[in-house]
Image 1 (cartoon, helix red, strand yellow):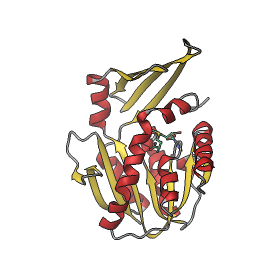
Image 2: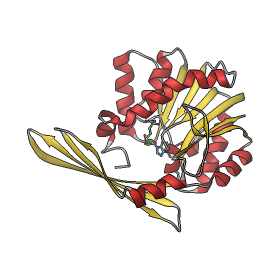
Image 3: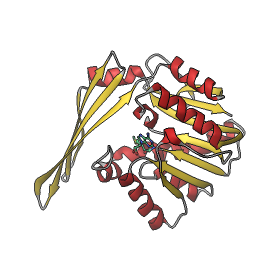
Image 4: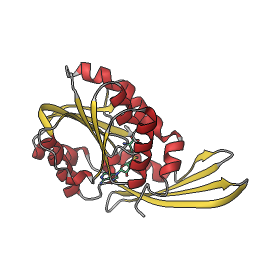
Length: 250
Ligand SMILES: C[S@@+](CC[C@H](N)C(=O)[O-])C[C@H]1O[C@@H](n2cnc3c(N)ncnc32)[C@H](O)[C@@H]1O
């Protein structure tokens, strides 16, 4: 089983989808800010589909790709229930094979940090560049090294959820030599009034320097339009930003 497969239903039922919901709400003003009137969107690492489905409901033609079959199964069920059409594909984002097909490519919620090799990050950027139409935008966020280190040092153990049904704990560590953060995720799940099930997953995210990300973008042929610490208020990146948001253009 890959990451997010055992954890998929608990991801979808937790507050984790609120983030992509917020990105959905920020999207129209982002498009206005950069004078874009897109019709087609590719959402990389779409997860259980919150962003892709909302975009399809707003009238865009959307394709969502993700590595995890369990996350895609949730996305498919949700789009069927909501009666919206989205093209779903199981695909790793470092192996994109589209040509001039999309006006916008998005990748939300630190999904790019799951690429643990710089070569894979650069390959993803090159694939996105090929997938975009001329002048199309690639918009994404990543966790900063500052935040991955802070999680390990200041929030080494966090209780992410404590309800009648689930008790979920995250433990965080950081390998300073490799710039890799490890998240040990454990959820105890109540079934038939007893804590019968324990679910464990280990997630790894690599921290990339802003310089490494910019170099890869440049090599792929992108022009940087903005590099922010927050997308919603479009504030500048600082050395204490948890995330970095890039808006780049083909
Ligand atoms: C934190 S979730 C974010 C999901 C979604 N973007 C959101 O905003 O809710 C990370 C997602 O990245 C996917 N993922 C991780 N590595 C991937 C890869 N190499 N290619 C495609 N998807 C990947 C996982 O399966 C998971 O669905």
